[in-house]
Length: 300
Image 1 (tube, rainbow, N blue to C red):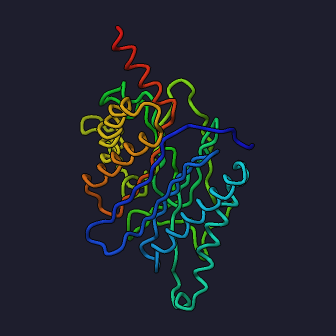
Image 2 (cartoon, one colour):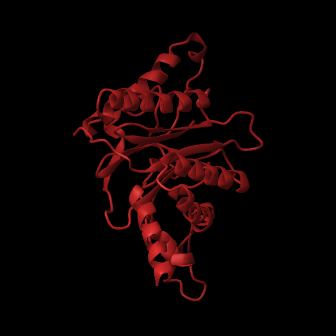
Image 3 (cartoon, rainbow, N blue to C red):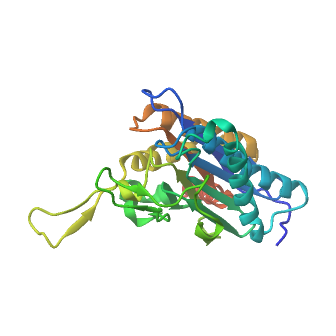
């Protein structure tokens, strides 16, 4: 399904190295093209050799495939597996170097991707992390937003392990998962409110890191932990982005720069236990709905 000319969403992707580490084993990238937008974030598996190399190669391979198809006139939904193959082949090619023969575990990484089409989004991933879907009018819910208009769409590829919190079952790299193992879902665009999609590595958010519990007074009453990083990002940094966009008029580059600054500010201010990466897409409809609402409020 080739795409028409578009002027849709703002996208950005940023990463932050854990202070105590020498190398950031995460890697991120985003692309805004003539017919398509895309985000890719990867978290190199810390127990594997040269995990950072794998993460960088995966993101580059996937986005290089997107860019090539975009320049040829448009991306077909069916092409997504080709981009994953390119990401995988990038890593496999590197693994042929002699230095990797002595390592049983090398060049392993997770990968989470988002591709925006004209009327929908295609999400695909191997590994863990989060893909948050946030309703475009989230700013109307104040601090009651959770879980009213926010949901994590990702069910990661991990299982419980005795030695640590989770064990990764699927990954990208030598001896890793094939295309049939990739989880994929399609989300239709909300034509009324729009939406915000936030991709994170598990240094920020992942369902397998959340705690479960019950009320002291009523053991039948169950609760699940809210991720504090994401709660602050939505209630502070996303709202701050919206408060600034009316000054950008119709300049999409200016909007994306503001978004990038808010994501960077979030990463710099928050403290994480691991490398932390985030990719954000804010739909054009979300921005327009916010501006229309502000105009209505000022006229009333």
